[in-house]
Image (cartoon, rainbow, N blue to C red; front, side, top):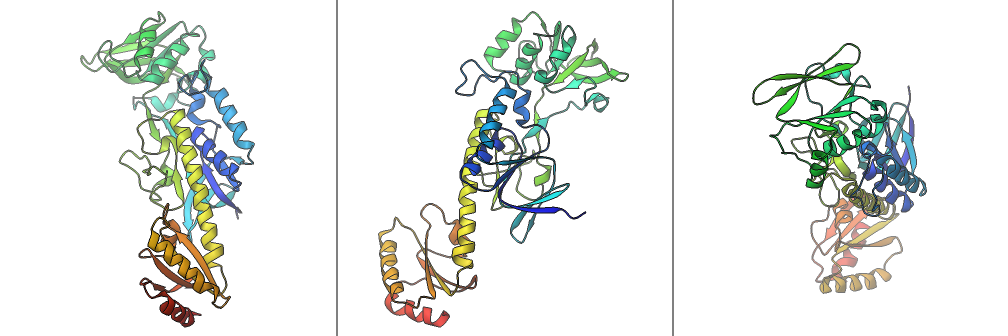
Length: 411
């Protein structure tokens, strides 16, 4: 089947808070932008019953409601949204091609916002009870279904403890399996104090899951004491896993550099090891993974994608696509001597054949455009014809004699 091919300035893969923020910035910059999300807009943030640490919401806000606001604001700036899975990402002649089952989206810039997914325990029979058969990763989604029931939570971090307390509003009892010694948790102190004071939460210390048991649906979770080896079966109606996450970066394997855990490496500009590809949010190598930090990543990623597209368009249209001879002056605008050279070059250019096009490339803030032209030093003049580098002038001390001679040579 031939796939429909569409061209965009920016393609964003992933519809969590980082992806939506990046798309918002790109769309607001009037770039043709599409966001591709395989399932639910909002990503893992929609699994959180109450977000209390995002500025602007002093009373807290439900994760789903917050993501609806993000989505509405993003679409206001003309961002297209496609709810489908990305099957492949490839590079073809410097173009980035994002493939889905039916379409190919050709991008000048790609923003990876693929987030992460819940980590599994690896216990026996775990796979049997996934997909709505008793094991869940979202208290917000499934709490109401467990009204009046007995549930278990695995984990002791912020998500586990906070979601456990949310579940206690519905369930009659919430059993919390904690791998640490009694009284020790990974959650923040405020959450720990609230949880320990909650009469519906029962903590089972020094334990991990040994197996999940049942027929068609989960009926029993068998915990194992890591110090004594004792096996302890608990009859439950549901089990919620909150033991961390693993990155959704399989699509990026071999495309960009990653760390040993599979997170994408970026610099502070959200740039990956491959030009034109940015990574934002929970899929990148970072210290803190929260909605607030995802938004910050997305803002930088969207802004830098805009700058990258501007550079691509400028090089394509004004340098590689220009008729005649292009004379590109690469200089640093904060250097007085290099500004003086610019003035002399402009005076000389004024008397040249109109087929000679002068392009000023200031590397003070960024040398990415100059790098595309394979410059070696600043200041220097690069000569291009029909998109090809035909020569360069690095000694500018005798401009009045050397520059006209080189122009005559290449014109």
